[in-house]
Structures are given as C-alpha cells and as structure tokens.
Image (cartoon, rainbow over all chains, first blue to last red; front, side):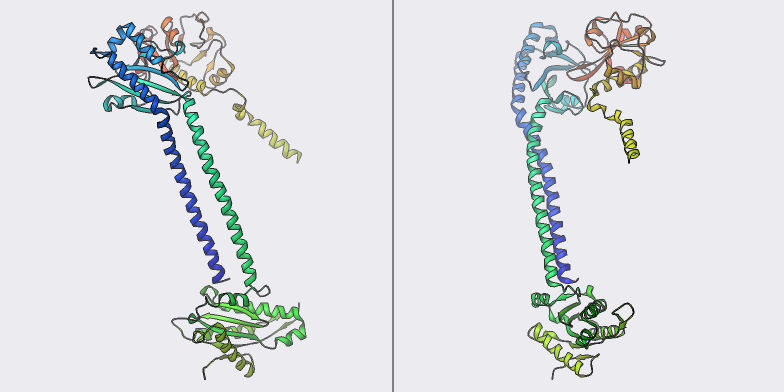
Length: 388
Length: 151
C-alpha cells in the first residue's frame, strides 16, 4: 500500500535505527566506563599500599644515606640486610605476595639483594632474576614508579616497581607483587557493576521490544481499519482520517462507478459481484502509479475515488490514466465461473482542480456531478467537470 | 533412528578425550615447563632426547610423553630431569647423562646438575652454571647466554 503505511514503516525503521545506535553507543560507553572504573579502582585500592611502600623505600634511603654504594653496603653488611628484610616482611599481606629489592649488576642482569618473602620462597642473595619485559629497563631512564600487569603469570596479578635513587641515579628497585586475589576482588566489584549495567540494558531492550511489538500491532490494527477487506484498497475511513493531510493541489480527483453493477449482482449473485469489485480494484491499482503516491479508495458499494498525482510536465496525465483505466476494464474478461466470463464497463467523472473546492468532499461532489454526466451520456465514458 | 544415535554417540566418544580437562587435573604450568625442558634438552644434546623423570606423576607423563621419548629407567635415558624436592639424587648416578633440575637449591648444592628451570616469585627462571657446562662440553646458543651464571 502507499504513502500512509509506507510512512509508518519508515518511522518504525527510523525509530529502530535510532534506538539501535543509542544502544550501541551505550554499550561502547559502558565498556569505556568499565575500563575507567577498573583503572580507578586499581588506583584507589593500591594507592595506600603504594604510599606505604614508597615511604619504606624512603626510610631505606635514610638508613643508607651515608653510603656511596647501596648494593655493596647491603651485600656486605649482614645486619643492615637483616634490618631491611624485616622492614619488607612487614609489608607482606594476603594481597601483597612478595616484596623484594633488586639491583642490576655490571652485566645488566637483575639480582636479588633483599627479599621480604617467607623462608620457603626467599630468594638467595645475588640470585638471578629473569625480567619478562622492557619496562624493567625503562625505569632506569625515567626514574618513575612502574606498574606491570601480568596476564601470563599464574599466581601474580600486578607488580609495582619503585626506583630507589642514590645521587639521582637508580640504584635499587623495590618490587611489590600483588597476588591474583587482589585483582579477583577488584574484578568481582567490576563484574557486579557490569552485570548491573547489562541488566539495565536487557530490561531496556525488553521494554523496547514490547513497545515495538505494540507499535507493529497498532499498525496492523490501523491497517485493517483503513483497508477495505474485499478489494485491498483504502476505504472511506482512510479518506475521513486523512482528508486534511491530502494536498489537493497535487492531485486530480476522479470518481469511478461500475456500470450496471446491481444488474450483475441480481443476475449472477453477490459472489460474482465481489469478484467484479476485487478485479476492478486490481486493474485500477495496476494502472495507477501507486509508487508515485496515486491513491485508490473504495468509497462505498461499487464506487471508487481515484486521486491521481498531477505531473509538472504534462497537464493531461490524469485524463490519460483514467482513459487507460476505462479501456483496461472494458477489455478485461471477468471469469465468474470455470467456463464463463463477462465484460463490464465503468463510468468516470473527473475533477481536474479539486484544490479550487473548499475541501475534499466538495471536490468529490463536483467529480460526482461529472460522473452523473458520464452515466447520462450512455456510460462507459469519462466526463470532466467543467465550471459553468 | 537407532543407527543415527549410535553414530552420534560414537562420534562423541571418539572426541571425548578433548573434554577430559573438565575432569582431569591438567596443568598449563607443566605444559610450559615441558616445552622449556624440550628446548634446553635439544640445544644440549646432539642426539635424540630420551628423557627420564624420577617419580613422574600421571599428569606429567601425559604432557611430557606428547613431545618426549620417556624412559622408564634411568639407564636407558640420556637426559635426566629431577623434579622432586627431597633428596633423590641417588636415583641416577651415571656419568654419561645430562642432569637438570627444577630446584635452585639442588643446583647449588649438587654439581652433577648443569642447570635448573625453576619458579621464583611466580616467574619462570632458567640458570646454567658456566663451569658445569664446560665440564659437560656443552655450548649453548647465543639466546641462552643470558641464563649462564658464573657461580
């Protein structure tokens, strides 16, 4: 069908497209939000620990302030090493798995200097430490605290590396390894939030689906209210509903009436009458340019209103189309039983300038006058209303 | 219908081995370890590696047997990987084999081991001892030089 329902489909599609875009936007925002929240939670939940460890590092520097070479001093002074080790041991919690101090030897190999871990996990003095990324080397140039997230390591989640400076040169690295439990705790908070957001989105989507289903149902009901069940063209309700929305300046208005329809009904029965109505409507619809916003309306009984869009180029387009309709119906064989066909004719009254009337029904009256003339002139012809 | 069911059930059972990780204790750590040991054994030996692991567990056997020829006794092997913590050094004493361990303390205390692969601070570490490599006439490729220690 044309304009009205086509438009409502377009509105539905537009609505769906806008909502889909909105949902995608919300989804991306949620993902971005999740990352931001994750970063913030990490920051908030580790900031105190980091401050404590940084303070411990500062206190170590204080203890070593008279030293020119931190590494050699700690290596050689057992008591000093023991003292630092005890300080590091205090930092171990269920979330902080390991705290230790490393140094880089002349060959560039990282080695343990002090380890605050429990005895079974304690590394030996000068034991080699294999680094897994370049970040460990970068700290020697930018002298800033580094965070490494472990994706591969089985029991570690993240590590902070705090540089300990001597004479503005990085001499030692204090490392804290957080256990997986820390991230699991943070992840559980994030997952709860994420699930909450997903839950809201699902509810929103569910409501949206309900709204869409209701809209489709409403359109279907509206369609049945405005479409003639027998002929599948618009009915009078449609015309009444949209009379003010139809721009009469763009259309010519014709009234088509099937000749001797009562005789057909009386002779062959109402079922044949229905066939005639149905096929006449089909011929009219096929001949009109529905895609060009031409409209056909069953006004009542065997009477149809044709609204034919005027052409800017050709002034007589409407007349050509109604004449074609007249001929097509005249030439059509209506099959009324398995072997019998009949021919029928129609009369058409045309109002070429319906916009000159006050409203659509006044314009219809004028076309109806022309139709009366066509009937009077022997039927099966087209008459155009002319102002007297 | 019966044939159809039998067909699907037989397909399901054929591939059921792929789902045993749900019930078996399959350790990714063992898989990683096995690959590292394979690399080390291959660069150390110039013949086919015949690996012996004393007191090997079932899950280790499953993983290692996929990439190694495992021997049941020490005398048939050419590469021995000692994993047990307690003092199992006497299980294998033959001189004509390479000994490797997963314990850093063991490496330091017993000079028959030329190297170790172990987890320190939850990170994988590899150490070869220079003097022992020399004793075994082993020359490791350049990318292994970073793991050689002069202890």
